[in-house]
Amino acid sequence: MSSTTSSELIFVTGASGFLGSHVVLQLLENGYRVRAAARGAKADLLKASYAGYGDRFEVVKIADIVHDQFPDAFVGVSAVMHLASPLPGRVPPAEILKAAVDGTLNVIVQGEKAGVRRMVVTSSIASVKNPQESFTDKGGFPPPRMLLSTYQPAPDWNPITREFALTGGSDWATYAASKKFAELALWEWADQHPHVDVTTLNPTYFYGPFTPLFPVPDASVLSTDLHVYNLLFPDGVFPAETRYVDVRDAAQAHVRALSAPPTAAVGRKRIARLITAAPKALPADVLPMDFGRVEEVLGMKIADFHTTEQTTLDTVDALIAVEEQWRKDGQPIKTPPPY
Image (tube, rainbow, N blue to C red; front, side):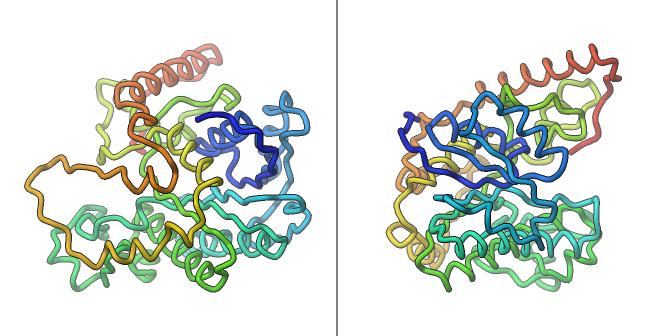
């Protein structure tokens, strides 16, 4: 992607994460200024990591993105990029769902009140996951007939209910529900605020290297690269799903979304027309992909994406480098648990 002379200020949540670090780096490399939101020690770490960018990178400390009011953080901001999202397993499911929905709305509402008119939000493929691959209380994928008594499928959202997410006992069910209901709430808000351009991206697993400024992670924060790391061990577990996107490509899509055509020109009306027609049955296990929508909205062509070979090799190289640093630090090297 060619550099821009833009000096626009972009407010970013989730800047310390795997995707967020790539988004921040690409924003800075393309001439944008960045104001990142972070808590406590993460804020201090971000300041130190990006000190070389001077006043083009700044950090605001926000203790609670769900409840805090931080109007000063949006002063001079041209666009909001909301990447932060709670992960399941650390707090009860009800808190995860509330944090995902209320955290998204809190950031977006405050941004709009401050005059920001472009929002880019990271959702997930989990929010629009094929109903035939939905979650059960056993954590597996039931045949379609088993969905009828448990779910209320919609044509463009995963079929999981709030009730099942709260009682199903699956972290991934909780995560899928949190992404779905956060995005639903966002689009409901967007319908009520047509003067604001809202873009959501629904990526799958991220693979790829870490940015040069990303702190050396421990095994608990390898993100979805943990799937690849597992394959480096003789007794490692093969990923349950093979869908992925190179984290650098996902970051590029987020940055390009800032200059994409307005939602009114390319947005949801077209999507609604597409989902009214039943898809054709395809006999192949490997299904074709249509990049037309990505090129139309983001200007990204197939050639702009990293190949599977590039992503795999770069990911493995990055993980080997991380492992070598662990050895120097005296950390034990052992087969990680499945992601």
